[in-house]
Length: 231
Image (cartoon, rainbow, N blue to C red):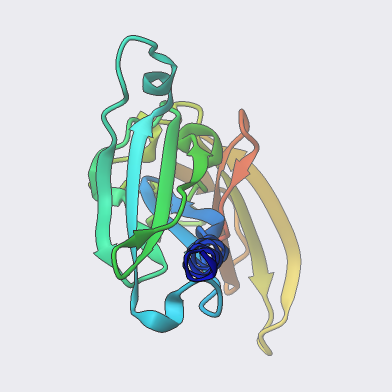
């Protein structure tokens, strides 16, 4: 009787230890995004759970959020990345609908033991950062200067105006003195891809920098590096 009690006690202790060693899920999920480039990142505490007993791998899934609301059938989760040791998953080539809302999920696995799923919602239209113009070129026309601006591009090299019809540009330009100091800065905004600066000073260096903007979600890119022109 005592032996049987001892065996049961050992089994009970083993179950407690197993539960206590449950694999922790990833945390701090974040989407690094620009235009239509999306990378899901996460943290995972190496010292927790059973990580010491083997290498940790991660699996990432994604699904349109409206699919989770269906009561008729279970959602069909799509594979983003599978069995990777990286703490990130590039979802750029998954052709996510820009106006859609998605749920990303990721879990950790060690020696056949899986953690719970950690999830994050993501809407590209609202949350993806807007990139700067893909190119800025200057073309002199007498005392005028044409600023030729190329739209920010998607991951498939298409204009981001396809997603943000009201995209426009904030243009900064300034005179530069002989010693490289900025003088008399100016600013203007335009939806046009070619903007003309008129009646510029002769024998003067001008610097131009351009930013992409989309006001509906208050998106603004970084400014392009200054482009220099001598009038």
